[in-house]
Image (cartoon, rainbow, N blue to C red; front, side):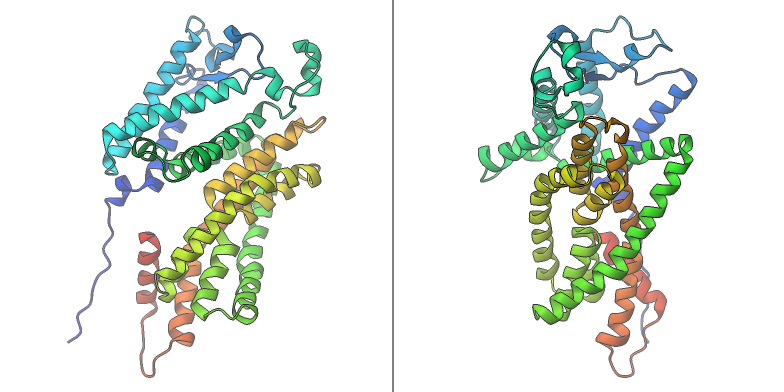
Length: 400
């Protein structure tokens, strides 16, 4: 008598996986900010660099002090607010790192170094000559600068990060930095917060929200029904790749990168070398695209911010890199004369596209699993219940 196995849900993933902790931390910050709608600014002590700046004593401002609706933070020293930010992030991130099984000491040391470097370079490149736009020259009494705008500081930070990871530590990051440099985790958390921002903005600009949703639905059709078949046919017929290699590569390069490649490989039973190789190729290309595509988009698509954002969301095949490329493109476009009105449009479009495409990965894995067991690798006389295929494909996908 055949024994049936019941798929069990691993609830420990709720506190052991980076994806979930990105959600929990994002929700925590979101809910702490909600009372601001009623004039209670729980996060009003958060500092930010006042770019462009010339006077170091006025280079850091406190968010709450810039608000006319409250006087709760008028006496707070900016340097003290930076310390509060460090301690706040250190506390919640260290707790999460401990529950995920990382070394607490190494994480605290690594995060401390990362925080000092990040905030330090943010402050340094906030200096007016590194970012001021031409329309700010008269106010700042300067005659030249590198006009990337305040948001363009992200470009400097990206270049510094690439230099440190690929030149200074080209062999391997030191263990103390490797534990604290959880880049994907930090970007995923930022994506959650950006999603909250998009939702809040949508309540104010409903027509903008409708436009974003419409274009994101188009992105789904493009990724799954156009790009995937084309990528598969080119891989299989032109490059003569194996059918499993072709399907996995098609999902990776047309849908959402590493996650889609792993989910597809699991659903069709591809050897582990297949998703590993495809994932490596995707990450390599994403790093190159992250540096090059934003400048191309800012040059040729500066008057079409939605198109620029959609291009970043569809072309850069990892979530973190897609969000980062959207932010860079957004900064480059909005810093140009007369284009400040497009600020956040590109970034929002890029992330919305990526999120809408990601939503359907599980269903796509199920569809491919059905095709594989009923058409590609069908065995004579074998009948597999649809529910079993569904549970199998989803459990394998969630395990990635």
